[in-house]
Image (cartoon, rainbow, N blue to C red; front, side, top):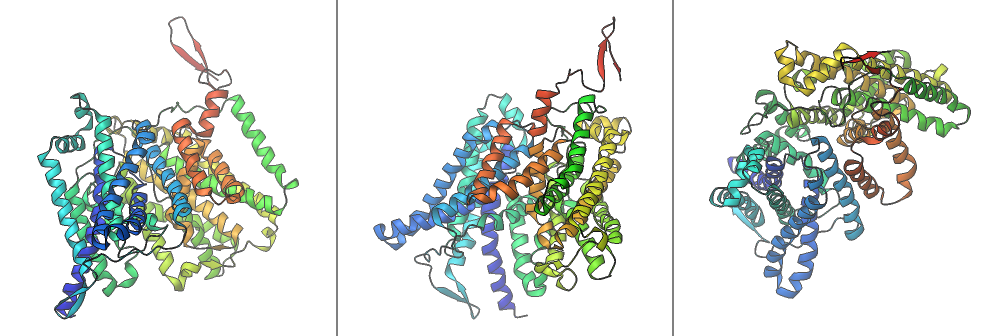
Length: 636
């Protein structure tokens, strides 16, 4: 390969690295101080591009091309920084002490609202910005033409890194930010106004993301999908570098951008998954990133958790009534209603399996869709390529998912906190890219079709009852596991890892097994799903499916075992029946998520439980009776 061409490709990688660094830098600063994984950071990037488009269109005719353009770029970044402050004041300030999962979900709600806002204000079409005045031509380097503006982008990354170093090392505010990154509680104990500090950090992070989007406008048109396309890579860079470490983010951006620049020449098929492969490798070898530091072991419990108890009389009656209702539904539902109920079973089981590791084990997964999709693809491959019937495929498909969860779980359970979650995301993206690009086997983006039930189960009513039995058995199995000593052991490790280790519990082995069991049951849901739809595509493995599962769990209530079942049912019914009636369904769903996080953190089932079944409800299975010594005894 020509050395001159290699150098040009290296320069292209540097330009991409600068853009990645500007985005990831703000993300890692926000996390380092507030400990919030800000899913809305991609929205800040997108708003920076759109605001720059509007400002350049207004200012360039008034002030001239050069002054108007170069003034519009920082103004757009400042405007995005102010919007980040608004989000901090109205939303994040209310949930700083909530569990990290609620914080992430709240920022995801902001993403949905911003997506609809952008399409309402600017429209769904791509908007091409002006070329940068003064840098519209190219330079010749070793006989190759290279755009002048790319050199501007290359310079932007190191300049911003230097400015941040000066800010953090030569100003009092910067020293406070660095101190908060190391020990936020101590900074508060010393009398520092943490609210103001957090507001300033959100402004800085939003400013940097907006600056990245504005600078990208001459290279890439503003479009409503910019946020989704960039946020995954920004998370990858942040995690590889070490959450909270700005220099680590710069180093990780260089590594990822250069690997992508040359990977597309050597092995183009790997470019989709390359960042996630690198992240998985780094986290397996160095669990806290290249320049990060190990996380302090903390409790992963959720507010409102109650001790697990056998079902009380009221709960038993509710479950019996629900089962009876489900058995009678086909008598009153048409074919479409049965199809909708089938999908409710599938998504309720998916949410329940995720809650098994989240609620009982404190293991937050961002990639649970991988095992749902593996179950679906396992069944489809057995039918489509090997000619097996539905019976064999439904029995074997969960094994595909279980083996995948067993393999990935061996690496995942060695991590904790956000690193655990991001490694699950990395493995899920690896599975997704394999299904997306292995066209000969999986059908690629088109997926596989014609995956139908056997003749005896082809009737919609028969398949309804089959799905009810299969999904119900998987739920009952996980329910029993959660109430067994195994489930209590998981909760012990979730609430205090140090105490669990001190009494001799092999916590990693229990977590690994729990991860595999949850993946297997998600595979059961996937196998039922593929035969109900008759087809499967890579969307079942994608990030949005994992996010939907998280929303279902929190909508129902992570503090209750029945919550995910309720959340799965409510979420899918909303998604299928109500939200499509309006063009602003994303904004409505985002607003519902924000209301849920702020006003009903216990979820639907948790809220109803507190109202109908308080702790001292005589309908509980274990009635409390205080003896003369003041001790509480339990009798059934």
